[in-house]
Image (cartoon, rainbow, N blue to C red; front, side):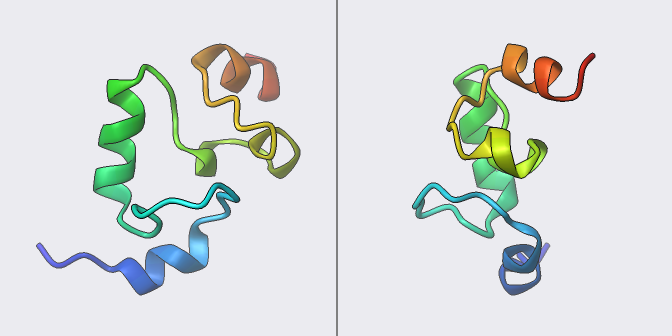
Length: 63
């Protein structure tokens, strides 16, 4: 499967500088291994806090 990095970059709103930007499969693997979610899962105001925890996700989306 070919990575669609350029297309992914248009969607990626993460403000953290990272070598995995646009390479979603690697980004998701890294975050899940740390028991967190990638920045693209959060609203912009929450994403900027860099708190990628499941708790922050649930709070942001009021789950």
